[in-house]
Amino acid sequence: KRPIIIDTDPGIDDAVAIAAALFSEELDLRLITTVAGNVSLRKVTYNALKLLKFFNKDVPVAMGADRPLIKAPIDASDIHGESGMAGYDFEEPSYDLLLKENAVNAMYNVIMSSEEPVTLVPIAPLTNIALLLKMYPEVKEHIAEIVMMGGSTARGNAGVMAEFNVYADPEAAKIVFQSGVPMVMVGLDCGLKALVYPEDSQQLKVMNKTGNMIYHLFNNYRGGSMKTGLKMYDSTAIAYLLQPEMFTVVETFVDVETAGELTAGCTVVDLKGYLGKPSNVKVCTDINPEMFKKWFMG
Ligand code: BDR
Ligand code: CA
Image (tube, rainbow, N blue to C red; front, side, top):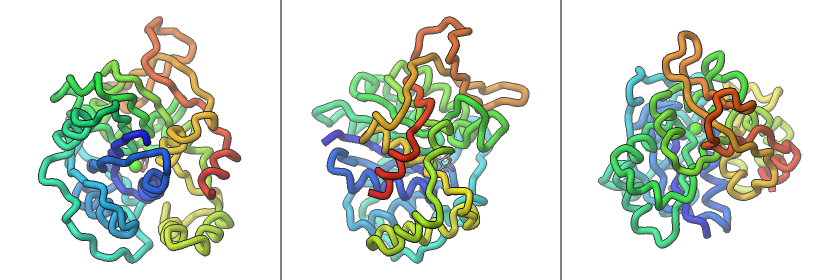
């Protein structure tokens, strides 16, 4: 089993991605770290613990940054609800799984004590990952790769040219892209096509307990407007780990615009090599939506 750490801000699509990772026979989810993003750090951590209680899984959780490195915090409660995971009445979680150490130290410990390199899967703003790479650069050699959900080769969903996870903390994203660690970017190019429709959600409702829970979350995702399809952004990162053949991948140079007059948080993906810089990222430029749907509903 491939050891992974998920860094997350649940988040309705995060919840689904975590479920997919927890129930995969190929992935060994060693740690969940939380970061302020969709809603506050306190709320996303509470949500992660609620999910683990629901799934009856004992994965340790560690709390990370409660704000971006430099920028003022933003949130996405308009999409995910005030709680970040609106729509399902979860049982009160126990805090036994919450580690005393912070996310950065917890990641360090898991990475350095693992017998094989660990894959980091950030599906949230990259604050914790940037802090880890700056505080403990020695971890770089022990990270298999960073498979992130975030960025875009085209336009944005949080700013004109910026995807939410990068826009929320552009400086952190820049540190991560420039780190030299092997990276895979699964961004909006794929997330916008990884769609779940009302009829899929109805199918989930009667599938099993997890499907039923997800159905209820979906009824509240983006205020319940499901007709044009709900975007399963964060699950695309898990899909990449399990079925990379679903994706079109281009190796190229990527950096983050942090100071653009109108474009801060834009991932500058140099597909045509204008900048003449060596490639540092495997960019997923496309996804096969049918394959995704089949995997997702399977
Ligand atoms: C990303 O932003 C968040 O709202 C989602 O959970 C996902 O990680 C999509 O842009
Ligand atoms: Ca997320």
